[in-house]
Length: 433
Image (tube, rainbow, N blue to C red; front, side, top):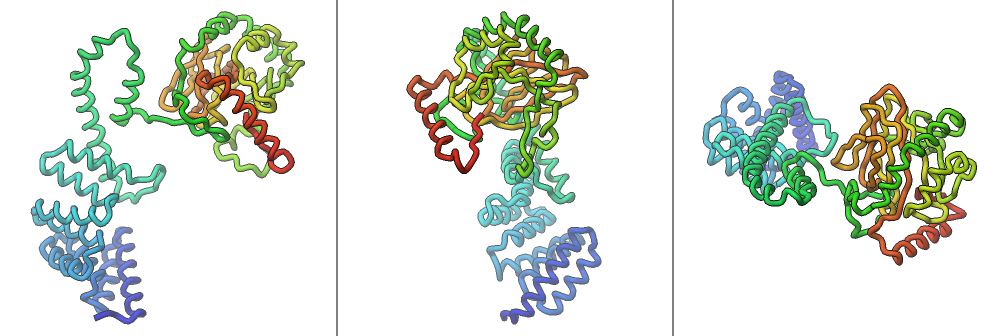
């Protein structure tokens, strides 16, 4: 017999209060609210379910089973009822019935975290650790990044993490043995991409993709660091490191007033990860080109560096590129994870002054800078930098065209970006560098 709306609302309020009290570790309070609900509607499915849960907590799995089966007879579409029934079957040591109840939970809600966790523990109890690890993996995937979970769930989550980690360690050893002879047959070939593939499968590394904040050009290689052999001119730049460093050191000592914060957002702009570095000299720069325009007085101070840069395939989009500068990261400073504006360009680093403890991450790969050793990377893949030393770190940074763009595509990109700028000129400032 259906309850009047007011009585239905009151029963639900009492059951919710009982659940909150139980979750907060106050069983006496939970029983008080449950007793009130039982007095109003003893056969209501929510009341029967909560009564079953109370029996589970007192260790009476048989009584819990009867109450929960009565609740399900009235409402078979509530996954919580089935999950509690599965717990009753576990208490009665009836694994087949527990498995069937969990099937119902996951049929109703395939991403039910508690259902997946209990399925994992059931498989472990049945001597199936590999199958359990796969279920645990699926359970962990349902948890949003950064989610705050109840303290009561921590042991179950840790158990799932340990099971997944142990399973991947065992699989890693198994695969290493299987792959050993094949790797030996190809010792002269690069295996880096395959290693990344396996590392991703085993949960050791993520596969990052470009996330430009302005212009995303499709079907370009989503590489973190690009292949050095595609840039033979890097050797000439590296060979000139002493001369470039000499010009930088002169600027650093004689023109320090011309160094400016790289991050300089105006008031009213959401800063997110840049709050600590905004308008800070902890990350300062000395521009040679800025947003496509040369800085003549700076280039006059660094003629050798300027001449060398002109010999590289620098990106050229009037108003936006090239940009080239000395980048100084102060001691004990961190550049937080961020992404660049477009993958139509790539970024070159030439390390100049590199104390110990300076490293750079692009996507899943972290490297330490070495003075005079340049690299090319895609800055639209999440990247960040650290200087853990007690002195400043300095590198030369400049952008080049993505070498996988054809001449026609470069012309089209150049024209389109200028067109976007022209379209918004009088109303919205567009920054693409």
